[in-house]
Image (cartoon, rainbow, N blue to C red; front, side, top):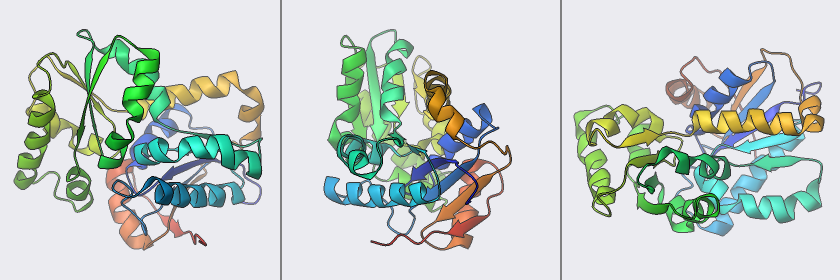
Length: 277
């Protein structure tokens, strides 16, 4: 890693790999290092202070690996930690480095998906409580009404390998019913958690045909392509060996590799990352 300057990608666990998968497909020539903080996951129900602390520690670890740019491929971290990192931490650390999230690029385009101007946001408790999507979407599409629904059992179902079992159907339908009860005019549902693409097909089975489901991977990847085009100084600073993909975890590597393969849709061989608190 000494001679590389990869793009860093962070998530509290595995979900960010669905975003990484899209980014790597769009930009295969760059080097990457992914860290999943599985030892301290899930982040969804933790406080703002704790999520900021954990996220910043992992971002600093990526900086030490040479990353000039870090993507928070985690909605909870983007909602609860990104603002402080961008406005405070980076100024003290290194103003030349950049940390980007997944909420703003999604908010910039999601309003264009809806004909009725009513969107449902499905996310973790932390993401929903932060109100980040409602605020950000309102900034870009003030005429769009945003409905939110926390789905706290979806991540455990996915990470425990139960998401494709019949027992998961009850909890998928339960949260969908709850958000659709908020308005009959919702025509777009945003999967505001990077785990949720694994149950996208199951979600669609319980929705009327007029409601479309939007996941974030391709949106974030397209936004990153645009960002690098607009910031050539950053683009030039990233190393390009085309085959350098590093996966790291703060917990058991064998366990991480097993589950990560489901999210990344390719074999994963990870290393251990020690985060010193």
